[in-house]
Amino acid sequence: MIPFLHLGPLTIPTFGLMVAIGLLVAAYVLQADFNRRRGRLQKYTSPKNAETNGAKDEGFLIIGIAGLAGLVGARLYHVLENPRELIADPSVLISRFGFAWFGGFLGGFVALAILARRFRVPLLEFLDMCSPAAAVGYAIGRIGCLLSGDGDYGVPTTLPWGMSFPNGVVTTTERVHPAPLYEFFVWLVIAAILWRLGKRALSGAAPSGEVFCAYLILTGVARFLIEFIRINPRSVFGLSNAQAASLVSIIIGLILLWRVRSGAAQKHNPA
Image 1: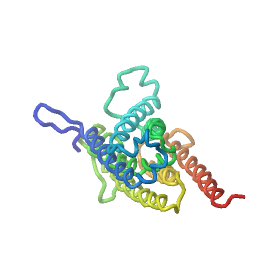
Image 2 (image 1 turned 45 degrees about the vertical axis):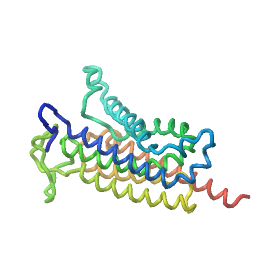
Image 3 (image 1 turned 90 degrees about the vertical axis):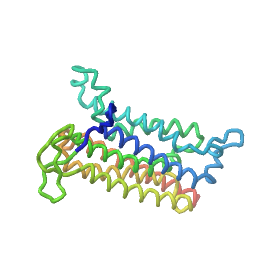
Image 4 (image 1 turned 135 degrees about the vertical axis):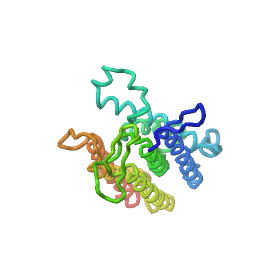
């Protein structure tokens, strides 16, 4: 693998490079979703305060802010999973390695909730727009994990596509499951599903919030299953921390989906 690219005097970590590319592509996806919803969003803004109507780079602004918040949240969550390591060496807070998916989700969610208020768009509608972009950005970021060999790979395997990481940040000469590659493909499929669900919402066939609920459920299920071949330590009931967080994501997604659909049904069939 290639943890670093050396361009003359420059040393570029491949993980950081892929995260940056992921954020850029996610911004384009989000901007496309903003553009296709622009007419729908106009009803939430007044002529005197029409950020969503006049601006043409909402996607890049949102991804820039939410992406940074997500990175901070991912790093903090990872560090706080091992508080003894933090106490022993506080410098681990600014390490380039070690980011937790659920922490990134929480950090990004807080940022998006604040941005939804700024753009004066209902939170669920706003999260619907951001969900496909979040899935795409995560997928591309996982290629950074693969290139750097940072330990996110899986358990040993005899499958023909097994890979070894002798030059990775966390080395192994055994052939193991390329878990980041699995996640790359799975999260791209999830992004495509979410994009199509967004079309249903625009046509009125689905209520606001359904896309975000699908994001919580699908990504939760995917991460829960992928953890079975990952090398992360087990803690709660024999599950990894990521699996426990995934179960929380799935449960919240299912409850929220039930509430969203119930609310939509009551609007269409008032007593």
